[in-house]
Length: 109
Image (tube, rainbow, N blue to C red; front, side, top):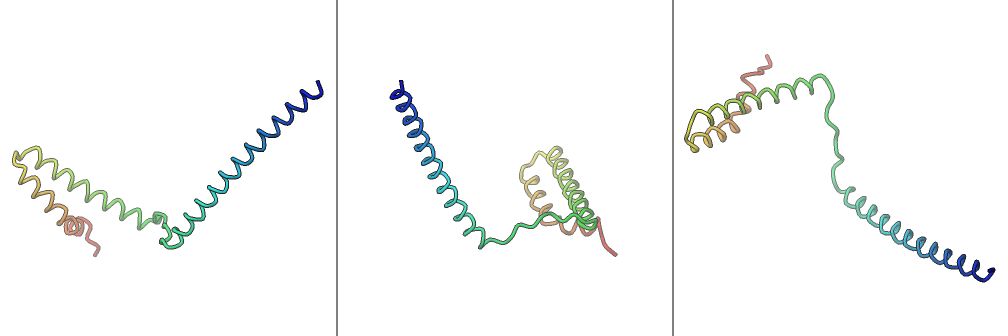
């Protein structure tokens, strides 16, 4: 009985040692990965969070409104015109003309 208990305890200790070794290897691998990530992140610019002020919120609303107007305009032309060339031309023109439309809609005097 005592020898059987000792054998079981030895088996549990061996399994615990194997599990500890696996955890150690995994921890070393994770540390290596984190070190690599830090080395790369050191050379990248810091990520800036989104501006939260009143002016930033106003600008986001204005840009969203300009984009919505352009999307509606493009959808209307797509629905009415049967020509793909005209639709593609309007998409390109609306992308190029978006800043001008934005200025016309939200002129700051």
